[in-house]
Amino acid sequence: MATYGFIAASEDRNTYHHQYFGILAYGVEHRLGQVEFVEEAEFGLDDPENRNLCDLLEKLRSGDTLIVSDIHRLGRSTVEILGVFKKILRRQAAVCAFDVQHDLGSDPIFRGIPCIQSLLTLSLKELELRLSKLSSNTKRIDGTAAVLGRPVGSIGVSRLDGRDAEIKSMLAEGTSKAAIARELGISRPALHDYIVSRKLLENS
Picture 1 (cartoon, rainbow, N blue to C red):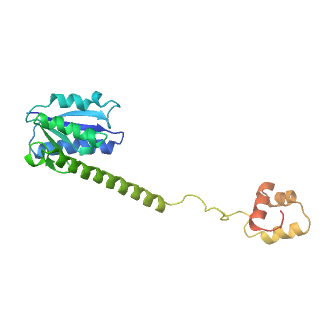
Picture 2: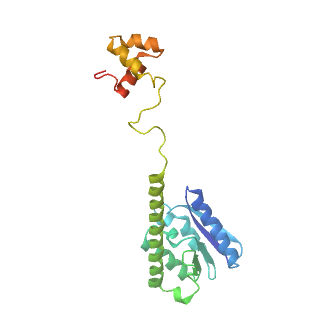
Picture 3: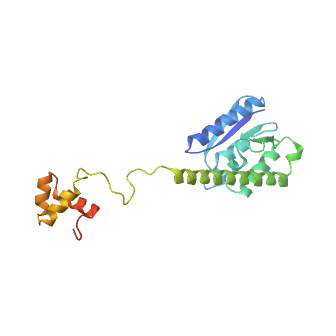
């Protein structure tokens, strides 16, 4: 009797490691012996018949065990996943999934396709819940994230702070901004921005 572990590969290494180490742990806990892994790009190729999983199903024999992390890893739709279960049951093999923590092939209670379909529905609902929680957590993190930089519309610190009266006086005397800038040791654009931001002179 052989034991196989099926991994729907993902670019997310955490997802991959969850499947890989979860399958190993399940195999050790239930004394299923050495696990032979079969990997495939998540949800397989466009043509289901060309999936690595199909080759694996052909290898299954009576008494063999197939371990997956979640039922929904076996296909892209309910019909496709039920088709996989039918092939496994016809070969009198067992399929074990973490989400239901049960051997779905060897227990007579779970041999009926309607029951498996119900379990599959629960699995997909659980997946939707996980995705919903992930989305909620992402929004919460985004909403509480610190905003970097100066708030829009705020006035920053300037080396001219405290010299407003002096600048106003020179402007009132008709001194040009270029001359004031030279006197204060800054550029004319910097002086202009300071005057505008502090509203030292209307229409500046």
